[in-house]
Amino acid sequence: MQLTALALQIQTSWFAPLTLTSLALSLPFPLLADEGHKVCEQYGVWGAKNLMGRAYEGVMRTTFLIDWNGKIALVFEKIKLAGRFLKISKTYRG
Image (cartoon, rainbow, N blue to C red; front, side, top):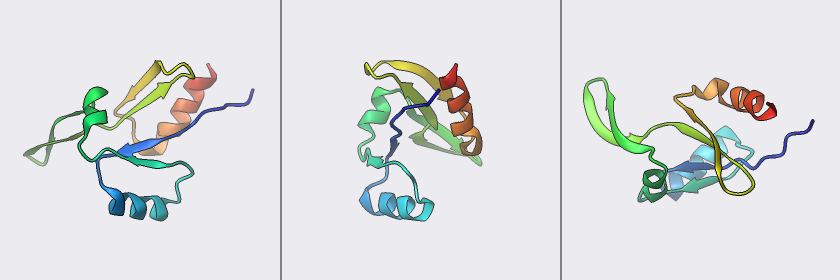
């Protein structure tokens, strides 16, 4: 069985950091900018965070698997980057 999917990454950064990140990581998929974090808010992944006692607002690292009809099929929350694609691939295969 061959997997077919389209991968996109959305960051709240603007163009320069996106370009540097994309080049540094040699990502095989496009990076999209959500400067005003409107997309993140619509998906419910923008909110209060805490790092070393400092409270701030930011993106909760979340992966959405969206089917070809545009419906959210699966949601992966708090997945470490290293294991994210393997876990998604195993789940996607069923």
